[in-house]
Length: 138
Image 1 (cartoon, rainbow, N blue to C red):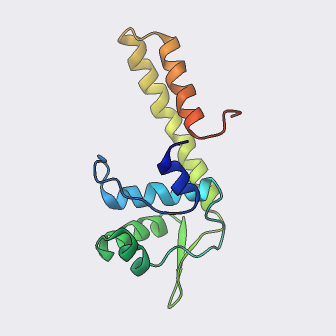
Image 2 (image 1 turned 90 degrees about the vertical axis):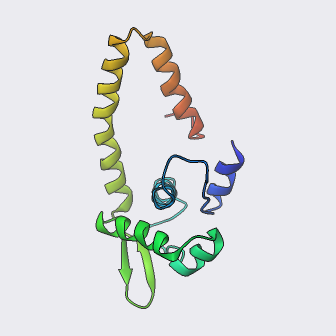
């Protein structure tokens, strides 16, 4: 398990300045991962925009942009004067979104087959992705 994964398991948001993903997208991706892995649970309060902004040393508008996206998709909800909370249906919504990604996997595997990439290499890449999750039983 990488150091990043260890820190994430503790629920600590991290920003990778070398990432191709925009900072707000990294926050969204990590919040989604925390929800799917049970680090953030249904109706649990998300870190406040202000505290996360201070912790990560980034503009609060960036955090707000990420939180707005999560709320628009039904992953979180806001209680005025209290903050953002994980929606009771968040894990289900995220799981449904992930299932839609299978179409991309099918399309990519078709492109790889056309390019002559050995199926064994594709399987190995998928296995590696699953093992990086930290649970090789799935």
